[in-house]
Image 1 (cartoon, protein in one colour):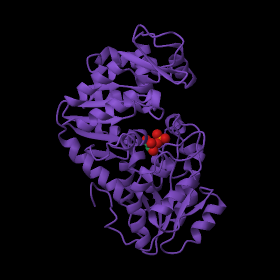
Image 2 (tube, rainbow, N blue to C red):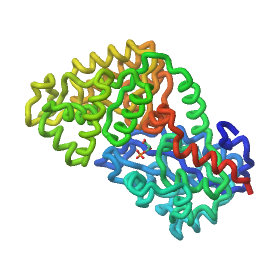
Image 3 (cartoon, rainbow, N blue to C red):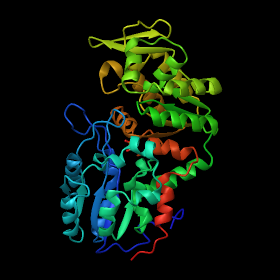
Image 4 (cartoon, rainbow, N blue to C red):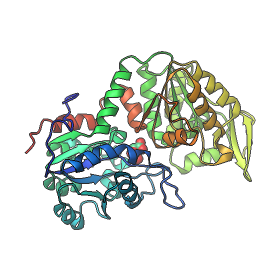
Length: 417
Ligand code: 3PG
């Protein structure tokens, strides 16, 4: 046991049905439904291969979210094909999570076989909005449909989904109430590395927060600022736009409309509160970029035309952020600075990643889009540690116990049958 959690070294899995929660949530091309990266799928391979080699019947549960927060859920069928190719062995897929078809399939598994169930987020109780509204306890999660249907089929529950360890949802935290539990190899690695890093991060410690997962970003900003973990936060993406508008800046009608359309208006108040308390530690863009007819334009804050929607930080801001990154001893990064997938709006993200590549600081990059940017700009070898988790990484660094860690500690106490 490490950290009070069973590891794969503590259990003989041969002939056992092991219900595994993995995180293979990848950036998806919204037009074609294809995966834009496979990094997280690759990261799960060692655990799955080991279980299968040791003769377990491996049942995989996972979610696929979207680049728009909590919308557009996709099937995991493409993921099963990638996984099969990486493993070099068959991965069965069933378009069901816990209905009769899934149950029959699980019962028919032979030793060493691998089955991937479909996206657990097709069930409302697995969705983050549901999590936040209902706040089920782990005991209550053990009563949800998915746990009631699948737990009786499982000898063991394994969680390798470090990237989702900050989520409090039934497939992550409910099974541990009734099924003997353990963590997988990836979860163990992330936990060990981050725990030791957390003991004494070298100062100054800078957080780069961008992207469009706003609820996570604001929760994290609050805790890394109030807990003292962050000396500075460099804001980009939609996070920065919300902060700028909350400060009273005019950054274009399109930028504002996007925030309203995404139901992010509630964050203006939070942003104001953060800016009042931590103005000296939150670094905001001094210029922004937008694209018209495929051409990039930039303007300083205060001079931004009313009819635009900002989709990147400007060059001056990116240069400032480069200086902070190069002057830091530790840098944590979660989220790109803009729509880096398209050439006219990639400059801010690219410049930030250039600085990450040549700073002397210990750099930690986490989260799906940030990992994609790291690969895109050829920085994989230059980043000190690439964590599969984005939200979970930042939440871990706040010092709070992650919900999945709490649940796994409990499930590790249940005797293996
Ligand atoms: C992530 O991408 O951060 C994890 O997979 C969790 O995904 P979620 O934010 O959709 O819950």
